[in-house]
Every structure is written in C-alpha cells, then in structure tokens.
Amino acid sequence: MKNIDRRSFLRNSSLAVSAGVVAACGGGGSGDSGDADNRSPYIPPTTGTPPTSSKSRVIVVGGGMAGATVSKYLRLWGDQIDVTLIDREPQYTSNILSSLVLTGQRTLSSLQYGYETLRSTYGLNIVNSEVTSVDPVALKVSLSNGSMLSADRIVMAPGIDFDDVPGLSNLNSMPHAWKAGTQTTELAQQLAAMPTNGIFILAIPLAPYRCPPGPYERACLIADWMRVNKPQGKLIILDANPNILVEPENFRAAFTQLYGNIIEYRAGVAVDSVEESTKTLFTSAGAIRGDVINLIPRQKAPQIIRSTGLITESASRFAPVDMLDYASTSYPKVHIIGDSSATTQPKAGHIANQEAKVCADAIIRYFGGLSADPAPVTTSACFSTITMSQASWLHGMFEYNPSTRAMTPIPAAAGASNGWSASNYRDMLIWFNSLMADTYA
Image (cartoon, one colour):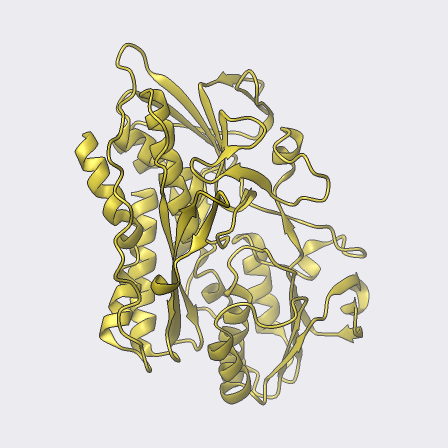
C-alpha cells in the first residue's frame, strides 16, 4: 500500500469498524443520544517505507485479535517486510459474542477464524507451534518443534492467563469460559442441565480483566434465557469490584427491572477458595453454594511475557509499554499489544485491533528511518446483549498525552446508549462482522 493510502487509512480506520456504533447513534435505539463522536483522528504528516534492498523480518507471537491485525497490516502497508505469525492453534475462536453459545444462539464454529486468508492474500508465514522462549536481545524465538526463528522486531500478543484458585483443580467443574473454546461448551451444557430451580453463580474478578462489560452482559443474557427455561432459578453475581464497572445505569436497570426476580447482585465480594465436590465458594462475605458456577479468575499476562523479562515488577500483572509504539519499556525492539500489555485503555477486542495498527505503523516507520506517530488516536466500541434480542452500546476514544505518556480518554467522544433495543442488536452483528473482517479477511 502506498504511503498516502496508509495516511488516509489511519485517518479513518479507528472509526471504520465502529460502523455499528455510528449507526446506533444516528439510527436510534431506546433513547439513543445522537452523535457519539465528531472528532477526526490524528493524520500522520508523513510515513516511511521500509528499505527495498532486503526484507525486514517481524515475528508475531499470538494469532488473536491483536496478533492477526498487526500481522495483516504489517504486510498490507509494508511490502518489504517478512512477517511470521506463530500460534499453537490452527484457528482463532472469538471471545466476542461467545456468551451467545451459552444460550444456544451461536455455535463455536460460527466464531472461528482461520489464517488461510492472511497467508494467501497478504503473504504471511503461518507457523502452528508453541513458543517455548523468546530472547529479547538477540530477537530469537524458540519453538516446541525444536526450531528457532530470528527477526528484526518481535511483537508479543499472547492474550491473557488466569490466577490459580485455591481448591480448584478441575477447571471444568467451575468453568470460566473467558477464553472461548471447550470451557464455553462445558458451561453451556451445565447451564442446560441445571435444575429448574437451580442457582447459577457468576463470579467477576477484580479489574483489569478482558472485556469490562462482558460479565455483566453475560449475566443479563443468561437471566433472559433462564426466565424462559429455568423460571424458578436464581442468578447470583459476585463482583469483586466495588460497583458495576461500565454502563452502570443500563446494567443496574436490567438487574433490578428486567431480572429483579432472577438476579441478585452483590458488589465487593471476592472468591478466596472453592470446594469442588460441594460446588461451594468461600468468599470475603462467607460461603455460598451453587448448582452451576461460572468462576472467572483474576487475570494476568501469560508466563511467556514474564519469562521473557517484559514484566520487571513482581506485583505487576501486565507488561509496561511505550504507548506510542507499544514497545517494551525494557526491550525496545519487542512490542506487546492486546491484553498482555499494561495500558490505560480497556482490554477488549476492538482496542487490540487498534493497538495493532498503531504498532504496525510505528514498526514500518522505524524500518524507514523515521519516528513513530507522535499523536496516535484509538477507539473502543462494544455492544452488550441485555436480552437475547436487544443490546446496548458503549463507545470511547483515546489520544496520546505527551505529558503522562499515556492514552487518555477524549470526553467529547465518549458515549453510551440510553437503554437497549433490537436495532442495537442488529448493529452489534454489523459491527462484529466488520471487526472480524478487518482482522482476518
């Protein structure tokens, strides 16, 4: 792609995959508030092209929303860059919309995206193997198949991992289903088999965690399903946080008005340990037993991030980065994007897509002898299923603050729906398909 094309793309791309949000703002759901954003993202004054004498090499670890996007756009914008994408799985299963699998509205296969288009259309090298170690100085990656790869830059996008929960040895006994896959199927089966008057417990960890509104929307979705299929059942939410973190007005209204006879919300209750045999949670507010337990543990960057030396403080959960280019603060030629990085932006699929583009642009500039864009802008858009056929929406934008060296919210660009509607639900599907196409197609 020519430089001018990339400049034009960066001007508009932070809003392009937010089409559903824009439609929701203008098209009206229940009490929609009009334009959520009238601000144009920063236009880079110039961009560089990589040297043509030899190809620069980039290795990307992880093929989720962040890893797939940065791989695609490194090739789309940088013709002379050789990109190798490594993931242990042959396909990615979207966490976005995966709670619809629990209610039988989606299948896991409908949320799976392979890497063939990235390989055939953009010329990526796809490697299905486990990364066993990364040398952040020599820029080498060792694989479980015994091979070793070298690069000029490495991008780490391995996603999240979870704290161990004392007493929990069989994860399927209290599945978190916060990485879409076998646990999602297991939780769906447990929900379907729950007694008509059963108790479903959803435990929310302390922030930060992947997809801030996700646990609350899952609770609403399951409560709507229970209203039809388990009408005498109860859904208890144990939130380790002091209050509902996002869209508090919408979720509080849903909990008390739509599902007041089903949902019981308890704030500030953390799970300390469990007893699998009796389905009992021992919490900061005492013991509680359920028939089905959706226990979402506290989250952190995977061990490969720490073993590579990208987290230097023992108490830190995520890797510190320079938010101009997402380079590690310890090893500037290793970049960390997506859920593994410590930023002031939410951990969400849309943000991962945005971080990846900022990172790709910066790497291409560096290969061309230029500096990173000094004022990147990202956008975060998401929808929440309040019922099985209606949704709310949330939108925000972030800009780089050179004083704090952080991405800070743009207040004028923030917005949320006033309630929920069927039209928002339709916009959610448009947004999702656009986002996944931008990442994997």
